[in-house]
Image 1 (cartoon, rainbow, N blue to C red):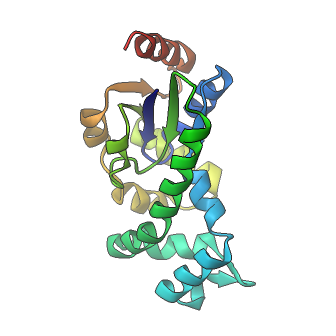
Image 2 (tube, rainbow, N blue to C red):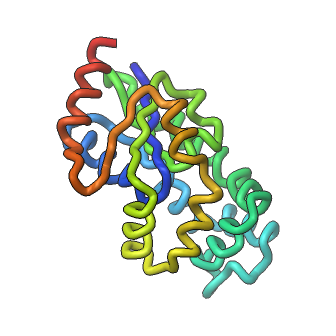
Length: 193
């Protein structure tokens, strides 16, 4: 089985692209969603509070907005959070791979595939790319946050150029780009790998 990584900067549309693969019958592991689910587990909540304090809590649950305010302006604090979450996500991914071992290939969707080093477990990597102004507009609209907040997140991720240079395939996702033909072309290429 080929393990394919799918990444892209915030607002690039990687989740949309992942859903296209899913609709075409390709199993997709949503690493970012798995991370968010972990924030509801008591053992994870305790670890996060021990590192970041009780200010990240709201009614004994992790307040994702408060946590984001802390980690997306401080790379060291983001690294601390990732050190809590990434090993747990990696464990879930390993189990998921076993469940899907009969598939010819699978997709692992992750925002920080390169930054986390998890791209090393992938046979190929697809980068979803969109112009920065488009990405900012999407995130401001989707998350109801300020442009400055989005820029802080962008600055904590690899640049588009870095991601594209390390990727095997690029899917462009600006308003006039058609996603499905790009996905189908990649699937055809992977089938002949």
